[in-house]
Length: 313
Image (cartoon, rainbow, N blue to C red; front, top):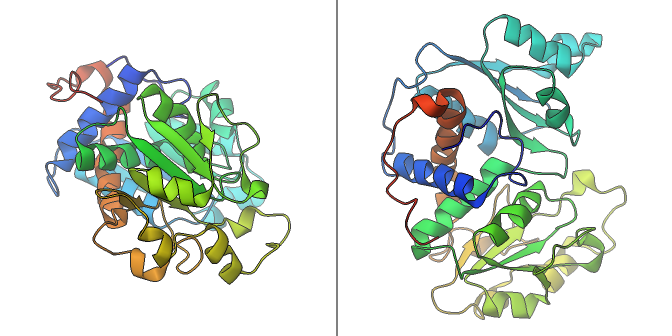
């Protein structure tokens, strides 16, 4: 794998780089719970300036399974409350010997700014409404496990698309991997820019034609105004209802990056139904993040045989 300085987004990664990260994620997914000493003695810091459950704990489990020392930064008890900038915080950690920082922030573009002036490795755990690259990787890994390939799949992503950093990464990655991407949801929640080849469709068409129906939650915390309709009305118009789920074609699956708003974007009975891969996504989050951390911190030192790089994606 070509050495990666950071993982800030998937926009600038090639298909080969994405595939190789997925290969290594597959390796770790095949070895659940296995402990390694690959990052023995290395220090990694998690800096989450936004609330998180799955991503934060998933990164910590990944770091500890690789043998790293983990530092969990708590903004409320740090010098940032005294006015210290994130840049100065990172430089402080760097001076202490911390080699990688996993950052979640409301500020889009913060990691790009930091990357120009720090030496430690940066991993984007979600920046504003821009990108969430490791969520995208774990989603792709889950699809690959389910269908055996990615190229030629039709994936419908529905819901609050305008505010989704998960969609931001998928818009860059899926076309590179030959996935047909459909978007559906309220017109007021469509992304400002839709890449060529990505199709906007109605909810019924999305559900009926997709191999993967991926729901996104309504991110009320990012809306400047309250929803123009009630949660019940939203569910009926744009959610994965029980009636719409019956329209899914045989073999199609349900995905969601979580957290889930039950009864809003998806009916509660569908969250853990037989066709749902939502819990599998959470499981694969650890493997995907192990792959990213290992690749960034070991780089060309890491020698592994790629079992999937030549396979059909």
